[in-house]
Amino acid sequence: ANERDEQLVQLETRCRELENALAASASGDEREARRAFAAAHYEQLRQLEESCLSKLEGQDALARTKERFERDNELLRLELNGARRELERSATGAGAAATADGRRAAEELARLRATLDQALSDVEQARKQRDEAKRGPAAT
Image (cartoon, rainbow, N blue to C red; front, side, top):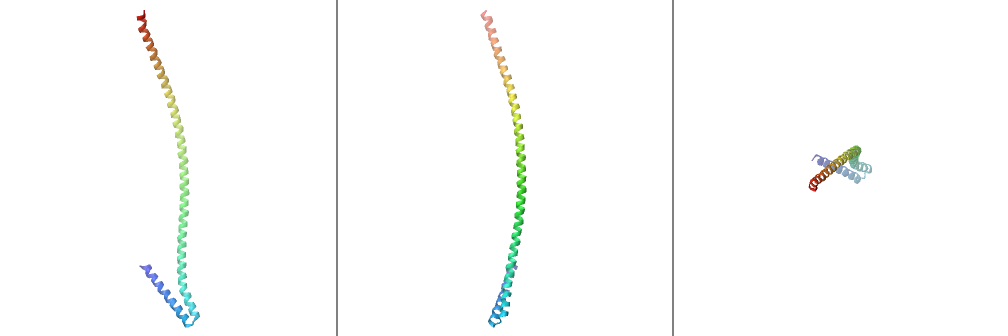
């Protein structure tokens, strides 16, 4: 409401100034007419200047915000790259550890297979001996 009232007062003032300019022009007082028109346009130019300055301040604020966002973005990019490198190092280390664990597991599996093969061989040998022992007394 206050802004609207202020605009109304400004319009009324400008109208009075333009009326004075027209009256001075009609009276033939060219100097007074020019002064009155200048006064009427001066207020309009002042408002335009004020509006431009306000817009420039807004643009400056936007530029500062943009610069801050760009700095923050760069810091985040650097942090992300550091985290990515750390993750790669960690994954490489985990891969190497997994490879070593896999190698150890494969070696253990090979030992277990060898033990199983030996046990199966021993069982097979014991069966043969048993079968031969059974056949031996019967054959004699």
